[in-house]
Length: 273
Image 1: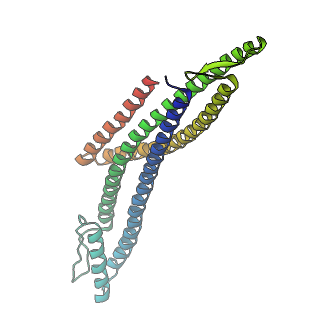
Image 2 (image 1 turned 180 degrees about the horizontal axis):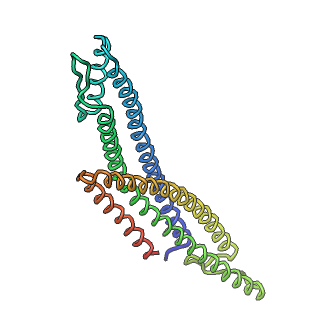
Image 3 (image 1 turned 90 degrees about the vertical axis):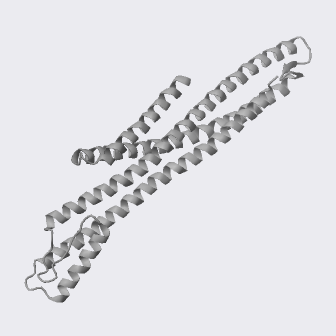
């Protein structure tokens, strides 16, 4: 016979395990978000440096009768830009100080490279986030299942209290000792009520702990999901602007597949509840 205490202990243990899992999943969601912000921050910093270098480079190119020092500085900038963007292939005519690309071409090449870096970083982060979202869905389902079981057990305990109180009142009217069967044993009614109250207190606190953990998870999940959707839209826009980038098309298909997997899991969870 499964006693109320055993049931309470099982639910408490199940909840503690889920809360630990939620803590891990939440931490992973936060790390994914922070990592993406860090990656994006590095790319934007690179963008700022490149902009300043290009501005200086073409200002120097516009100078007439360039000095050796100015051409040397141009060579230094070109070397730095080519290092930052290998596909740029900038060069300086050592005699005239003329560049092999005009400013518009250079900026367009750099912008394309930066957008590609953002897309690549987004693809990597979105893959991680999509995996974290599936883990979050699993933890969310387990939490909701625990809450339902706890609620059912609290209702069961309330029914038992009502029944024991009724039997106790009847026994008292008859002048007999109020003994009832509880958890497979005949015990004093007041002791049974005390045990019920003890189980209720434990389960009520367990219920609160589980709900608090679930609420925190849902909040982080929504933030991560919004970030996921934002990056998906960004990649779709970039793909429309550069439709020949096959790697972006493959990435979008892969990420869309992951997103559908999350939706299917959400629907599956709903059907279980």
